[in-house]
Image 1 (cartoon, rainbow, N blue to C red):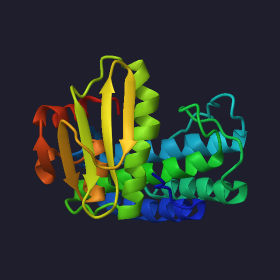
Image 2 (cartoon, rainbow, N blue to C red):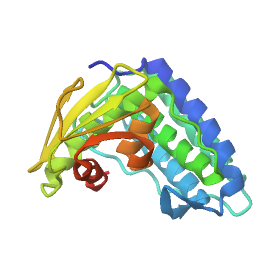
Image 3 (cartoon, rainbow, N blue to C red):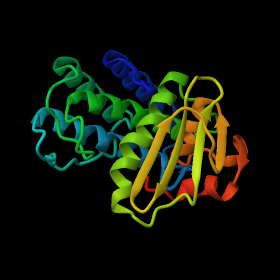
Length: 247
């Protein structure tokens, strides 16, 4: 199943989602983030800036063989506009990606697709999820764009789970789960057990079937949306086990 956006579209998503994140988080810097209760809005903003800073350094290093630790960031100054650093980090990352294009060598933790295009996709999806977190903190979250959300579901399964599950052999769904989008022709049947992920594209028989708009399914895969917001048939325990998978 081909789900990916074009490289230039990812850059537009990074800029758009970052702008929305900055606008949403600025009024709630001291408020707890419901989807990340260990963080305040300010902590969320700092996290996003650190992630962007890290990946900018990997792009600049252009070394696919190993991670390069960036110089230690000093974080926000007490009198600094809390969104200024976000704007600066986004400008740096987008500028680097625009100059490099999608095929320049760059390390990433998955060990596959060791190119700058991987970073563009990852940053677009990272910012989309955390923009949702910021808007949720303010009480009015907007959905993720459908095409981006479908791409994000595929990345959650094929990049994150395939990278993380082998190191967590205890992770298990206790059966198979079908994730299906009601607003796009996209579905996946997934099994997780014994350190392995099995996935095939398309709807099919499964122990549990979870359906909803692509944005809701994407957010479900990152534990931002619960089962009450979705259509569930079959074994509820299997569907609930999704939240125990590595994230």
